[in-house]
Image 1 (spheres, rainbow, N blue to C red):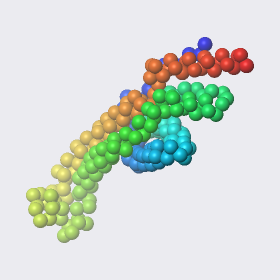
Image 2: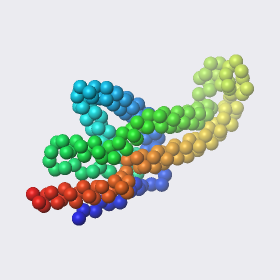
Image 3: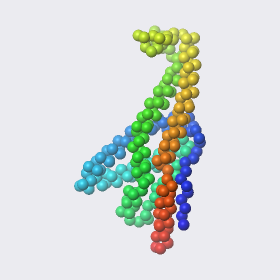
Length: 230
């Protein structure tokens, strides 16, 4: 009897800063690509299914979802140090039709597809938050250096027309740099926190559920029985 290990996702409680930053910034382009392919292949496949032209397109969509799901598990592990088990049902040893039906009926396929579809809006929010907080913090920290290269050697907030605060010397720039250090600390905490939340979100979609583990055990046992009988 084959026993499938309990689904797990383990690693650091807080991901490394560099990996977290890279992961969050990559979510948007990967999400855009995934969303575009899902919508394009899905709509084209369903629209032409009546003339059977949609069958290969939908098959390609299924393959994309499962392949991209594996890539996402690898990306989460490589950048966030969180391991996620593969959740897929074993494919029958023979019979192309049965293998495709197994992929189609496998709940993990549709969970992968759902995750990839949601990656675009989630990645957009994460990208905006991360870029904004890091841009503000780095801009303030570097203000004592670059203010002199601005027009007239002056930095005015919020604009040159409405000057609430003016930085025209290193002394006046230092308080802003100190504020930038505070923002940098916030940026680090936010980056790690968002990455940890996304890792939990990814694990929720991409790891095997309890019911899926039971189905995997039954499938492996059935395959073992077929192999022994053969």
